[in-house]
Amino acid sequence: MEDRIAVVGILIEERKGIANKVNEVLGEFGDIIVGRMGIPYREKEVSVISLIVNGTTDQLGAMSGQLGNLEGVKVKSAVTA
Image (cartoon, rainbow, N blue to C red; front, top):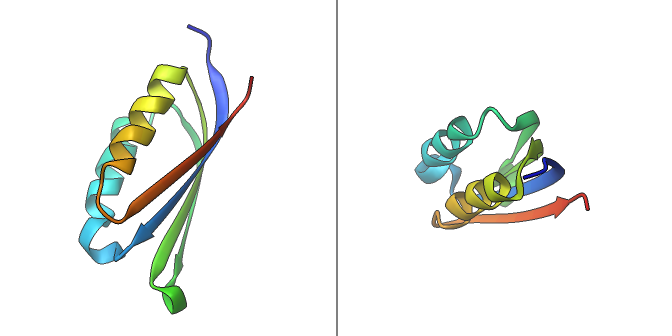
C-alpha cells in the first residue's frame, strides 16, 4: 500500500483530562508523524494540534479513529491523492 502525505487537525476540549491519552495515541503512531505543532488556546479552553503525517491510508485511519474515539477530541484530515 502506498504512503500518503496528510495534514491532521486535532481539537481537544478539557485538555487536562485527556491530554495524556492523546499523547499516548500520538506516541503509538510516532513513526508516521513528520511534524507536530500544538497550541493551548486558554481563552477558549481548547488545545489545537496540527500534524503532518506520511503513512498508509490504513495507518492514517487507525490513528484518526483512535483519536476521534476519545471523549472531547475532534479530528479532521486532508490527504493527498
